[in-house]
Image 1 (cartoon, rainbow, N blue to C red):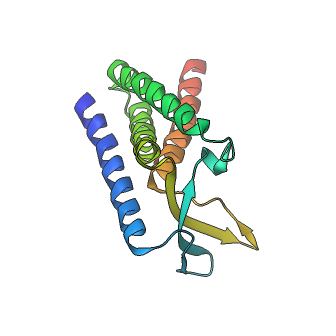
Image 2: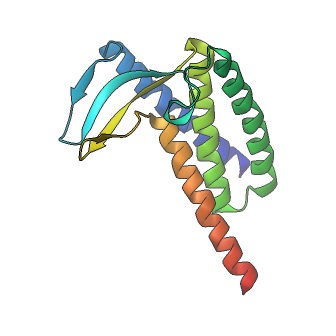
Length: 156
């Protein structure tokens, strides 16, 4: 069953890297293409973490966030081995693992993460993000949901 979760993480990495390659081959940095009234494709580079946190830290953040991603990935694989039969928990971990490694590949290769999904509404732009970020976010939501489910079972 562990192989199934690792395969899911690999699928996330492939989707992430393929989508980033498509964007970088068709856009120049900063270029934007309106798709709907609330969504653009844009080629952005994020040298920081989520929402460009520490993007102006002078370069040390590349290695800091790479190290964090490596340590977190090792820990997640260990958790997957231990909890592979807990489907919701393992699904969440596999999504987070795939997203973390997808962004790690960018950090190591380029020194930044390629972002391209740009949503906005009522004059507010959300930070651009990518497939890896989406997988991490979905995984985090599923972890919270799993936590609520586990807490409910403890009370019963």
